[in-house]
Image (tube, rainbow, N blue to C red):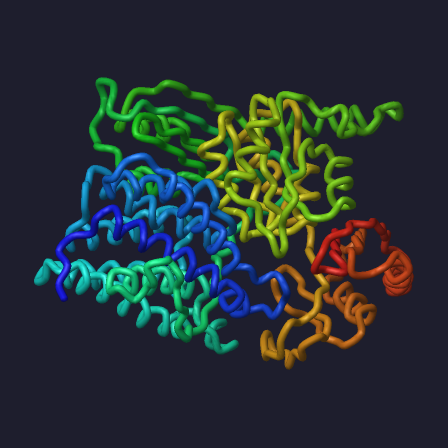
Length: 565
């Protein structure tokens, strides 16, 4: 059988089959988490993300495949949960942009769409990591392009895309050693392979007319996200600031008398990345906005003018600002009557939105000045739409988002791009980092300056988590048994034991160094205040100079969240 085009009917059936395929296999994908903790939710995230996309596609007006693909991409973006869901949305964003004007799809269109999707997905990730969903989509897309050179059969092209993706998935343990250590393949890649398998089966008539999808045996996978490299130091000697000028420009792309380049994001970004740090580049078809800390603001401004005229220029001397802050702190320290600001005193102009699960955690964040808390985190990442709604409904002039989980980074970043007000992300990986970041917030500072200051605070705290293993495995040098507790410090397993309290105490010991002063213990829904008090007493017995705090967080999954400062 040969098929030379995909109509709206076939495309709709492909999307719905893929949504069902992911839904049926979500638990399997979740089980492939490298860490044997109960929050491996790649499958859940991808399933919910695609379910949103499938609904948008079903509800779309029009019969052109390009219109349906655009609706699919929009629904995926707004429903995207976790990094895996956001990357999936970016694949279909590139796919839909390439095919937006198509009534039906030829074999070449199909190949071109996935090639554009792979390119868009790579650009969406700050530090693309091979051995993940990115490798799988790239290899599949290339196979589709190769096949389309000699065949106009969409079945042949789709089969080539799926088979190459499946082969690429099998290679992911060779590209990421941690996958090989645990004996799994990348979970995001597995999820995408399920989508491509469903597309292929649908086109070949292997999906029932009523839409029911019969799942096949699956291979294994796990998604590993590249951690963002965080800058260090909170309170600085002005002379130690490496890049002294906070420089912001807004460029109207292609307009002005000094335009010398067509705008290319990668070229534009790379030049600026070599000039400093804390770089933020956001653009649409008309405007590009830049924030960077540099010693050469003139070079930043001149570079922008090569792509368009300047709609905004702002340069602040951060060394002078730091001198002023230090002078202010000295005056404040001398004034015994100065009170600490409370959440109620936070300015209405800026919304600070934290992601957290548990009433206790929400209360703690609000006590630090957070204005809004979105319920979510472990086991249930909020969607892009959830975060957008929180930003837009805040009625603030600007917003700062604290994800408090690296798997929420991409959804938060996409939300910031489409929100109604200027918004930035502070890349807190843990609840402890989110709380420490709040110490760098200045209600009188500019949005991007607050972002930079809060991010600088992230490395000032060590984050510990105690949870239980959901399966037997060997990882980080430990022989871990199902049901045992694990102590995880900044993403690395340091302790495993059958006893919760012993695990927690050993986790604290692994976090301590000569500079440790304050230990904060937040106990969750799966333990009690009595056990938390026992932990506090055990910690204080380790060193008389340690100061401890205990709070009720009500968080799921983790009986204890521990921070050391």
